[in-house]
Length: 287
Image 1 (cartoon, helix red, strand yellow):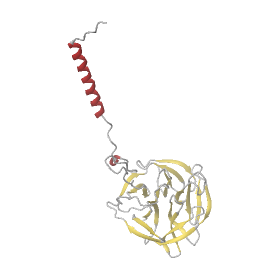
Image 2 (tube, one colour; image 1 turned 90 degrees about the vertical axis):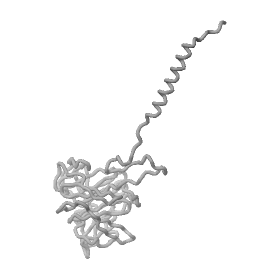
Image 3 (cartoon, helix red, strand yellow; image 1 turned 30 degrees about the horizontal axis):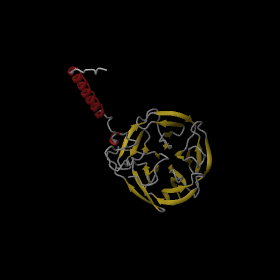
Image 4 (spheres, one colour; image 1 turned 90 degrees about the horizontal axis):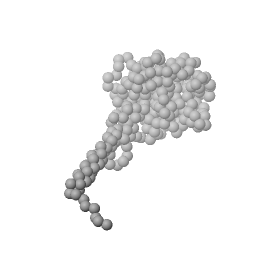
C-alpha cells in the first residue's frame, strides 16, 4: 500500500492545536477554589486555618451567653471579650435562657417559652405556661434515655419542662436550706451547678445531681450577690450578676476561684437576668 503523504501545512496545524490544548489545561489547573480562612467564620463558631502546618485547627471560641431583659451578650472564651450581639425581637422581659447540644437557645419570660436566634434576636414562641428560672438542659441519659431535657428550679424545687406542651413537673428538691439564686448549668459529663442563696450564702455556687436536683457539695461563696446567670465552657464557669458584672469561676478541687472580667463599653445600668451555654461544651481547656 502506498504510504499517505502528510503535508507540511497540515502538520503545522496539528502542532498548533496541541499547543493550545496544553495551554488551556494549564489555565484550568490554576483556577482552584479559594481556601477557607477561619477568620471569616461566623461569630459563634471559629473555623479551620488554611495555612497551618500541623493540620490541627485552632480551638473554637466558646458559646457562652448572658442576657439582660432585652439584649443578648456573648463572652469570647479565648479573649474574654464581652459583646452585645443582638436585641430581642418579639419577646420582652426574658428571665433566663438555656442551650441544648445543638446550641439552640430557649428563653423563658415566666409565662412563655421562646426560641431565639442569636444573631438577630428574633423570638418564636413555642409554649405557654408558668416557667421557672434557673433553666438548663441536661444531657440525654440523665432524665431521659435518648433525649435532652429542659430543667430548672422554682425556689428549692427541681422541675423538668416539656418544651412542646409547656408542662412543668417536679423532679426533686435541692435541700440543705438552699434556694436557687437564679441559674443552673449542666456539663456533658452530667455535673450540674447552681447559684444559690441560703445559710451563709449570698451567693454561693453548689454542685447538684441533675437526676434529682439534690445538693452534692457547696463550692463556696462567689463574693457577689445576685448571680442570676451561670454558663460553662472548657472546664470553667462564667457568672453574670444583677449589677452587670461578668465573673470567671475556676474550680480547683472543691474551691471556686472568682475573677471579675473587664467589660469595655459596658452599658450604664446593665442588669444580667440569666445565662446559658451548650450542653456539648468541652470539658477541658480549649483556650
